[in-house]
Image (spheres, one colour):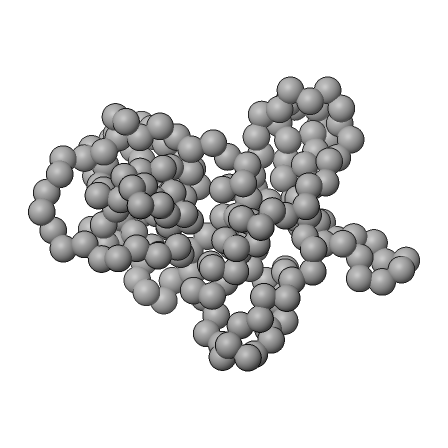
Length: 198
């Protein structure tokens, strides 16, 4: 798949003066006279900025690489094919949401989170894999958005809860040792191979 992407931007703004910056995807105008198109995400973060004027940040190479990796997992195409994407499509919006979470959210600490170790078959991990995280509160469904030799960066698809008490909400970012990343079949919430995760 050709990765010819027009430049994309994040727009961050605190228009309601709440102290939280809301994150949107900003698509620049293609032609003179056209207006840029803004697509809000559900991502926001606390900010100490005094101005309420929006700030536009160009997508980093890491943003683009993650977007393309997640897109490749969803769309099967020949290497020579060019694909035209509809940014307003709910699946594409879900991928953008994941990229925004990775770019703007800080990972939750996992020191006291991991469950007891046990022997089981483990598979090689890739970005975009749906997985189950072995926590002391049970197995939690997540999607892998980054990998290194020791840790996996994941976005939770369900909350980590102790009974009725939510400890870490869904759509939170975690960096966890790869040893605690298991097949999604361990989770009660495994939605199957054909589900769309965002």
